[in-house]
Length: 279
Image (cartoon, rainbow, N blue to C red; front, side, top):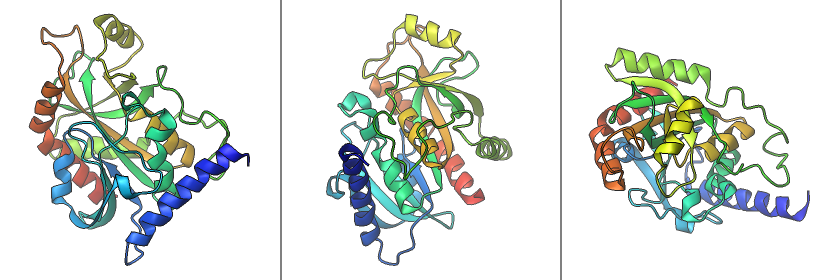
């Protein structure tokens, strides 16, 4: 390995070793849940055994966005041991894609096999409304700087990973069945990644809609690419927090996103809990 690859790999190993050293019984979870907007209350439903601030984990970035707490939780949910990422990292905070998804490789090193990603997103599809949920079936990553740029980390995956089924088809079916059985309105759709932090223009939304996007947001895709490279199975759910630019008369704001996320929090948390229970 060349030096830059060795440095990143060493950082991943150090972070994983630190986290592992904090888990007294050595029972490492195989599930990681990323608490995006609307899912933060799920932490209150978890039997928390350990909470580690990101700032104390070697090489971990720090989350700076309101509503993203910035700690790694270890606990039990629906009888399953889980990691919870309470807060994530975004390109618009000044991090490149490989840093945004650094934690994914750490989770892989720890033995995580399932990644449950959540986010808040603007709705593009005509039939998807604010405060509803969408199971991500695919994504558009045109505006995402690939987190795999640079020397390939052979310990984690191949140089040119297939992206045909980034989001696990079995998990998507499980999510849809759970939602139907429990009266949760859940759509299926394609998530488009944009760098932010500014919201998209109406022209950009029209372009994304023409390309087949159903929702748009500023996270998830770098993490999903990295997880697929690592061989981690992925489920992803978007909470539709607003109609995207030009599709309503409302001016977009982060306050609206947070308010809508709170409104849909109950369904979002319930879907996550029941999905974890079914694994």
